Image 1 (cartoon, rainbow, N blue to C red):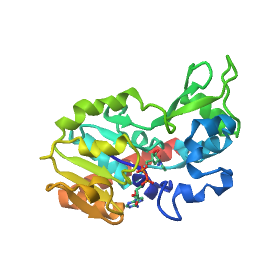
Image 2: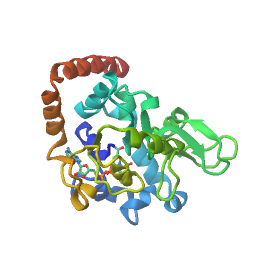
Image 3: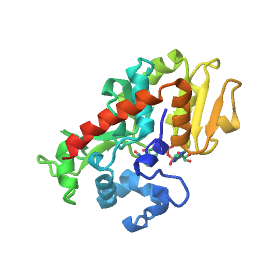
Length: 257
Ligand code: CNA
């Protein structure tokens, strides 16, 4: 299970870190309160702040970091049952983790839907408009086309239901870079069997690790890059991870040229 903290080393602010977090830096969007940017009522009143944020999060602008590639390595080694992410930046896909291994619990920019007639659109149609500061409109009914990001109160994507089969099968649960404050995602941390070790790697102690710890919980607090690099070292995977990151950097350099 991962959250915004996995992408802060890529330069994307999280929500809740004091000072650097997105919620403390939204003044320029003129919002009544920070969460309004992900509320449908506000979006219908004024969609501009959301699309300005979308433009900032454009997948081409950021690159995966060592944490994303550690998760990719788990997949390459056949150890990743599934990656449940709250992130909407798409960096798990850019890191080469296949869509079949991902549950993008809060949606993604890969697809979009007309808010009026519900017609689906590929994400690339929306980006073309967003990148030139235009509000994407449905060519059929002129309704605003909203990327399939889950707003407050909206239902989670169908794939989220995979948790019903995945979590009872897990041998270990890694929880990285999340405040475990957003439901129903946060409660997944309780969905593994009680004998299953849960490893929290985060700056601070969060969720059930603080208020209902289990005897097999392991907690590594502090900077995540440092913690993940240390874990990789203990696993003896440092060189392999560096090779993977070099190969992938070359691919991305080719993409950006
Ligand atoms: P959050 O509530 O902002 O929590 C992030 C957590 O990560 C906090 O506990 C931080 O202390 C921790 N953290 C951040 N950077 C580091 C670091 N370098 N080392 C160690 N710990 C760190 O974010 P959540 O994901 O828990 O909240 C859920 C929201 C955030 C979801 O709805 C996301 O869509 C949303 N979000 C996503 C992105 C993104 O896609 N990258 C960015 C910002 C917010």
